[in-house]
Amino acid sequence: MKVLLINGSPRGDKCTSAALKIVGEELEKNGVDYELFNIGREPIQGCIGCGGCAKNNGHCVFNNDSVNVCIDKMAECDGVVVGSPVHYAAASGAITSFMDRLSYAGGSALAYKPGAAVVSCRRGGASAAYDQLNKYFGILNMPIVSSNYWNMVHGNTPEEVLKDEEGVQTMRVLGRNMAWILKAIEIAKENGVPHPAPEAKIKTNYIR
Image 1: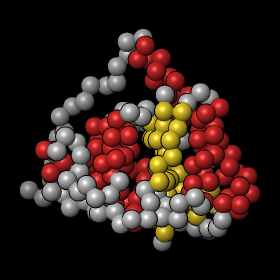
Image 2 (image 1 turned 45 degrees about the vertical axis):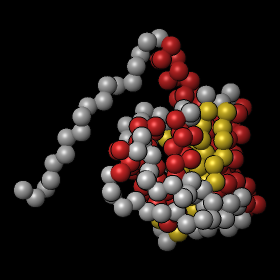
Image 3 (image 1 turned 120 degrees about the vertical axis):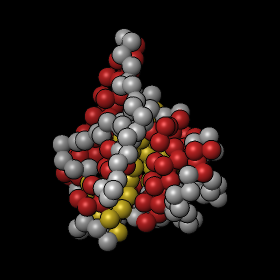
């Protein structure tokens, strides 16, 4: 079993990475592998709703950034944790564009796999960013993994994050909960319990 930890911070190995690494360490302690995937500092193209991914084997038509690389990695992973710093009480612009396209083009690679959001902030806005990221999982038939508090850490440097004792504990518990859910799903598969059969999507408009 393997979990992909997506770091949506343009600053690389900083606060968001510190939080994700705590989750990863706990996954490893519980027998689950992980990979830390940094989306980097290069511009991430936003989704333009062209629908081209439907004709492109579940990959985005834009191939000049890391979204399609991540879609391929998700096909080989059993769960995902998406991390972001808080920018103006929201997830970073880069991870928002990234998740829009990852979800739209690669939804089949994500469906029925447990997902969790992690946010890091200096002071405020964490709840709004956390809610924003969870909405991706909620539209893709993904079980949402929680902890003993909302999945957030506070601090302006990685060293300050590690001093946030409650935040660090939240990350540890999240790692254990993710490992437990993955193991439960694996037992279900071994005993012939498949994931729920998908239904064709019904779309209705509010204005007739």
